[in-house]
Length: 248
Ligand SMILES: [Zn+2]
Image 1 (cartoon, rainbow, N blue to C red):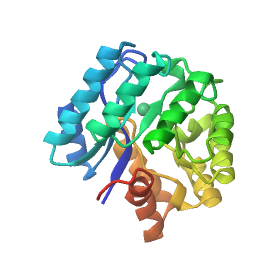
Image 2: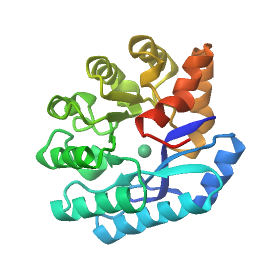
Image 3: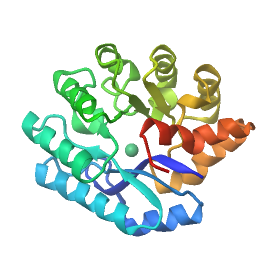
Image 4: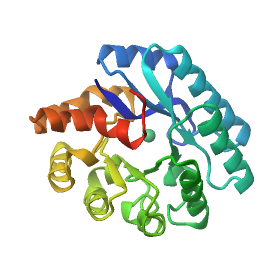
């Protein structure tokens, strides 16, 4: 089995990207990936648009024959009561399995007051918090997450892109230091991913594509550096399943 921890649907107004349901069906079939966790591309910062893309993800999860789960991405600067009700709706009503902060797109420092509110909601809903790291320094420098990690030791945090190619040593350091930190190293070069797995072990790293054209590239990285069957299984689906409590 292969599950992708970082999949997007919709239209992104920050990065000017689009991914449709048809593309997801086509590419995940083509590369024999069984499914994964789908989050919105960054839409316009309105509650109505946020609700719409979450509903669209929920509808796709239901209709597709692959195994998908939803992840909520809500602007942390929405009024707290709006943030809370949408997060709760996604997890309790739509069955979503996580929350996401994208510091560069949400203009949200991951250790700011509004980000801390997101940590609190993740804690109260018992879901992991994925935080984008890498592009968008200094907010997206993995070290910007450290205050949140010190305060919220019981919230599971997944560092998306694991700091990317430039800042993966910081992400690796956090995963070594904090038990509740996991790494999703999409866009990190193969040497960086190899060092990462040596340092934190295969049980803390999860395969993710972030973009349909990246699927074969990301898979090739792990087949190039890992030969042990257990390590490969951990990275390709077991870790994401256990961190997000996926019923597989
Ligand atoms: Zn992404």
